[in-house]
Image (cartoon, rainbow, N blue to C red; front, side, top):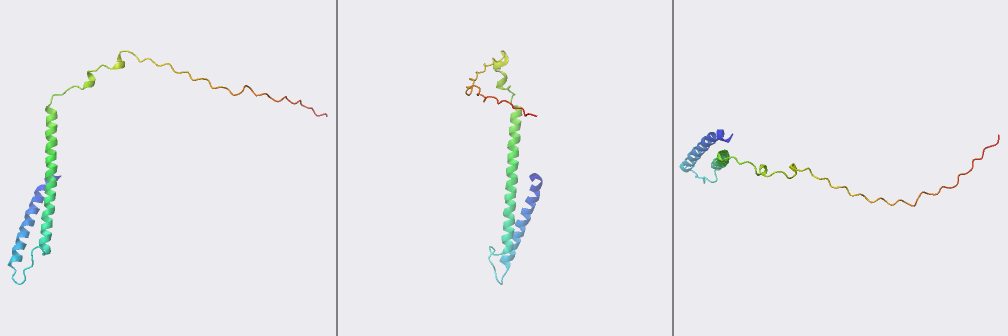
Length: 130
């Protein structure tokens, strides 16, 4: 996007610089009261606009430079001979023999609580007399 804006910004900067020169000539030609050009609001605004456009152009130039570097790196990478990855050279460990399973360690049996509880003697059922 920056490359399309660049000519427009260059043209605006030239326009602002021309307007600034005309304003400075106008202020120097004024005979009644010659204000300092630094105090004039129009001059200050024009200088600020020129400075802003300069920053924008610098940012566009930085992007263009980075794009050129990336294109160069990409071209160098494409031109370099391709090497196979190092992993293909090494045979896999477990490819020849299946892995032996480790025997599971037996868990020690939990000690049981004191044997079965003694039950209270069963009460005899008393049948009601009819």
